[in-house]
Length: 307
Ligand code: PMP
Image (tube, rainbow, N blue to C red; front, side, top):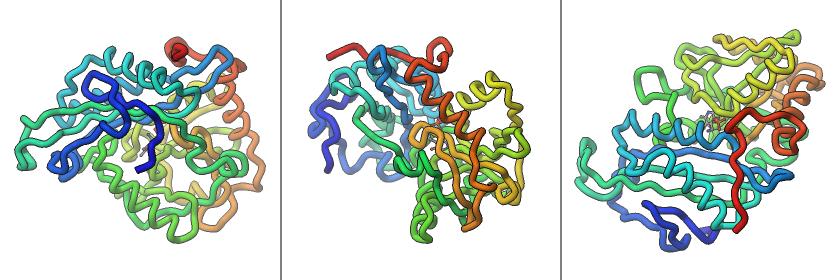
C-alpha cells in the first residue's frame, strides 16, 4: 500500500496512515455503501487553501442522507477535520478525501444498524489526466457503457458504488487507447466523463448537460459557470445530442481532479480547429483563483494553518 501521508483522521481523531484500517466484513466493502468527496488544496500566495470546502462537505452530507449513512459528526466538525488533516500532514497542495461508510456489523444488505465510520485523508496529488493533458488536451471516446439511469442508482450524488460505472467507462477508454471516456445517458444524450463534467463551446456560447442528464453536479462545473458568466459568456445548461461533440468548436472537462482539462479529440476526430480561446480563458480564470488574479467568492478559499 502506497503511503501518501502520515495522518488520516478516523472517527474523530488523527491516526497514523498505517493504523487507519477496517475489517474485511465491512458492509461498504461488500455492497458499496460509502459516500465520499474529492477536494483540492492549492498553494496560494497566502499559504495553502482548501477550495470550496463547505460546498463539498454539504454534498457529502447530502449523499449520505440518500443512503441513510448517519455521519456521527456535524458538517462543521467534518469541515474543521479536513483543515486539520491537511495541516497535520503539512499539505501545501493536493487532495482531501473524506469518506463515510458502513462498517462491520450485520451482513444483510438491508442492515441499517452497522457502525458508520468517517475518515479523511489528505495527500499530494498532481494533474489527474496529466500535465500534458491540462496543457494540450486529452483524447477521449464515447463509451459503449451508458451512465446510471435516473431512478436507479442515483447518479447525482457521490456514492462509492456509482464509480463502478466510472470504472467501466474509463477502463474501456484506456483499453482502446484514449485518456478518458464520456458516458451517454440511457436516452443516448450526452452525460459526463467517468469522473468529470463536460462542457462544449459552439459559436462563442458555452453548453453543458443539465442535472437531469445523469451527471454529478460538479462543484468545479458550478465554479466555471460562475466565472464564465462573470466574464460575459453565455452559459446554457441543456441536453445535448452526441453529435454536438463532433461539431463543437471546443470541448473541455471540469472536476476537482481534472480541474479544467481541454478535450483535443473525440472518437479519433479533432475537436474544432485546435484553437481553444474560450477554454484557455476559463483555465486562466480558474487557476487565477489560486494566484489571486481572479477574485474568489466568499467561502471559496479556506486557509490551512501552518503545522
Ligand atoms: N462527475 C463525476 C462522475 C465525478 O466523479 C466528478 C468528480 N467529483 C465530477 C463529475 C466533477 O465534480 P467536482 O467538480 O465536484 O469534483
